[in-house]
Length: 91
Picture (cartoon, rainbow, N blue to C red):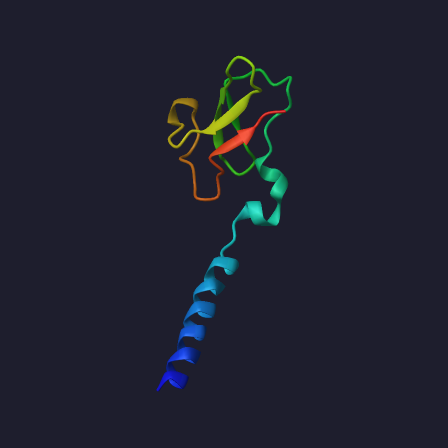
């Protein structure tokens, strides 16, 4: 009986990973999509090529970091999607 269960489990595990690979988003194809703007960028908000919008933050002694804005309608952009990283490190 065990010899029948193990192959089924193996197929279930392998089969469940296939859709994840097949549905990889734009960041998987082009990893440079989610790069923070250059240090001379002075605006409060930044939007990547695939419509992920970030807000600038900084603290004394630390570099600029960009945090994802989930609902950036106040700057005229669409909601964040699942391929948007939560944070981008500034340069």
